[in-house]
Image 1 (spheres, rainbow, N blue to C red):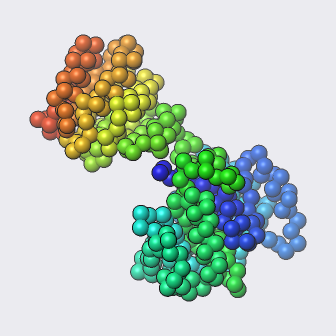
Image 2 (cartoon, rainbow, N blue to C red):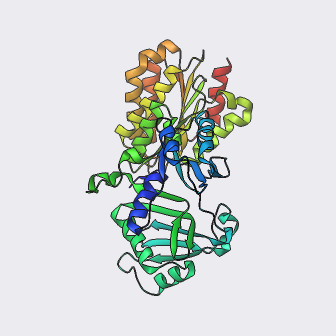
Image 3 (cartoon, one colour):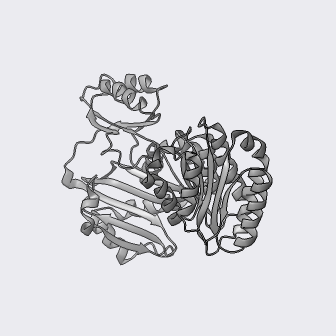
Length: 402
C-alpha cells in the first residue's frame, strides 16, 4: 500500500458527509477565485474567512500558508502572493470564532493490530509542545466498541455516533491516516477546523461511489517536480523497494545513484563537507532489493537528468554500503541496461562513472560493471568493500577537478 495525500477540500467533503454536518468549503484556483469571491461578497453578517494552501504542505500555519479571519475582498491578493511562490491549489471556508481552549486533537491510523487512535484535550498548531497530553489506544478492527471507545469519546466530549461514523468513513474510503487538528466540539456541534487525510493510492478501483480519485492528490512537491522525479515517485508507489529522487541543481557536475539510506547520507555529506555541495546535482536512493527492471527504470531517469545538465564536465557516482539482502549482480544488470541504451550520449558528454558497492553476488556484479565501463570508455573507478565508503567520493571529486 502506498499512501497519497488527499486535498483538504476532498477530505472534508467526505468527512462532513459521513458525519451529517454542513460542508461550507470551496476549492480555489486562479480560474474560479473571482466567481467564489462574488458569491460570498455582500455578506450582511460580516462573515470572514480562512484560506489555505491546499497541496499537502505540512506546518502550513507556521510557514505563512494559512490566513485566518480575513474579509472576502482580501482573499484574491493573499492567493496571488502564494501563487508567486509556486502554489496553485487553495481552500477557503468561513472563519469559526472560538476559544483556543476549545481545540482538541484526534488522529486515526491503520496499523497491523488495528486502528491506532491518538487523542488529546489540547489541540492546535502547538500540539507537539504537549506530548504528555496525547493518549493512545489501539482498537482491534473486529471490536470497534467497548471501554476504549467510551474513553475516547468521553475524553473528547464526542458523541459515540460521530466517532463510529468517522471510523466507518475511514474504512469505506480506504483511509490510511486521518488527523483532525484542531477538532472543535462546540454546543454539541462537531467542527473540523483542519483535516489531513492519506489514502491507499491503489484503492481507487474499489470505490464504487468515486468519493475520491487520483485527481484529488494535491501534493506541492510533486507539482514542482521534473518528469523524471515524478516517474521515480510513481515507481516507489508501486514497489516494495525504496526509491526517491530529488533534483537539487539541474546544471551541476555530480550525479549520484545511491543505495542504502544511511550510506546515501554519508556519501552526499562527504561531498558537501569537502566544500563541493554546489556541484551535487541530485539526492536519491534505490534500496530494499529492487528488481533488475526497477533498477533499469530508476537509472534511466537519473541518466535523463544528467544528459540535460549544461555542466562542462559530468560524472555519475554509483555507490552504497554493503547490502544485507540486495543482490548487487541483479541490480547492476538493470543499471548496465540503462547505461547501454545511453552509452553514445554519455561518451559524447565525456562522462566518467565511479562505482563502490558490496553485498550478495558483489564479485559478479562488480565485474559486469567494470567490463562494461572499460569497453565503452566510461570507466572511472570500480571498487568493492575494500575501498572505504568515502573513498569513492574522493575519486569522483578528483576527476571533476582535473
